[in-house]
Length: 227
Ligand code: UDP
Ligand code: MG
Image (cartoon, rainbow, N blue to C red):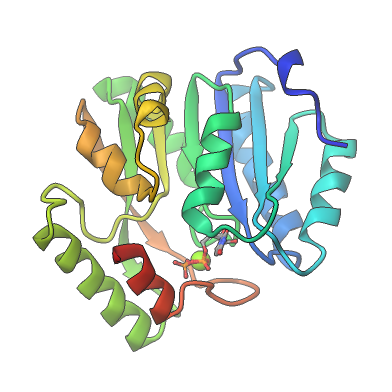
């Protein structure tokens, strides 16, 4: 059973990771993310995993992690609601003073947390967002549609939306409180965070190829994100 939410106090760090059919890589992600979290926040962190209607053993692995590790909170969505809504569920569930949003497939390196944390401290930033230096192992089509997607989003109103940034970011509780109070039904998290303002700084990183599984953002879903 997942932990009782009301029993938790505010940890220094919450990690929020949406998972759809990540059975092959989830343990490794958990292991690397835990090392990075402990190096940054000691034992004062929580690890919020969202199961987005997976059809594989993702949920079984999550419940096992909850049993083994009191830092882990697992949320089982009623069906597959998609990446953005899975993150949203995590953002309402988490309690941390700082919140890291990260993909579970190890394309976003957990080890970057230390640099993000340091930059947030030294520059007094409210958001530190990852910007991809390169897209290793991704097809031309994926790279092409991603590039088109960002240019299009900038054209249709998200003027400040940084290109080549996903949802991989560290943010403060004050940003999250604003984000969670926004009424949008069709949520596009990175656009909404960028719209909020305050001090938002990029940090460059190399985006790794997926180690296991396959991208769940084929062309049709990228278009769905725009529409
Ligand atoms: N994901 C999800 N629901 C979905 C599709 C993806 O929760 O319907 C998760 C997935 O497990 C991963 C993250 O969202 O942690 C990013 O998904 P993916 O790797 O498929 O996207 P890409 O890296 O290709 O943009
Ligand atoms: Mg991915």
